[in-house]
Image (cartoon, rainbow, N blue to C red; front, side):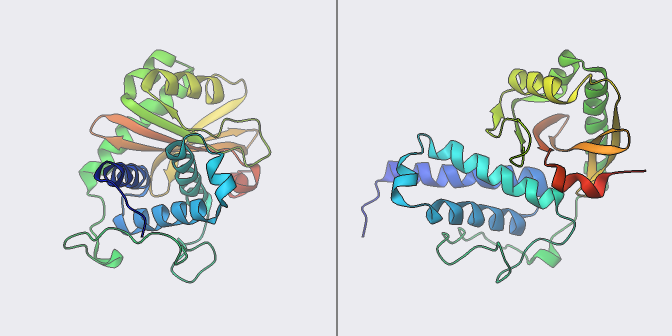
Length: 235
């Protein structure tokens, strides 16, 4: 058995909690978040020793993969994969930590109306800032430790590493989404909560989901892969 020091174990638990928080920001369901984290670690252990050794910052790699899985689920029209379905976690993935009094997914409480109204209000401030290309307004609605994750799907030259910090996120979003001539910024339901869809001549060029805590955005999730945007096109 490998000897794991208390310090290393604490780092591992902190790392897993970090990944859980990313998934919870996006989906608000502990069962879904656990599955996302399991799949993230499954992909880590699917790498060979040489590939893992070549990853300079494993936590950053895991963050990018977890964010990518969230984006895949955000763009998928069907239900989340369950145990035994393609893409579900394999036995090689570490088991989730026991959680006291966790209820089955079908018994979990839905987001209350007040939270959805608050989310809607903050998301609309974000949308207005994007539409105007106003970096200062974007910065004002972001939490200090906000994160943005985007995908390029191998087809677009878009950063895939997470970007951290309100200033960096505001600059990233401004350069990627804001102030583009002929682009319509529409406020629409994304994964059951208020988000943004950017279109040019009726064709979706980006779908944006946001996670909100109190009056600030903590995470921005951007889908850019053209293959995932087809169902968002409008005549």
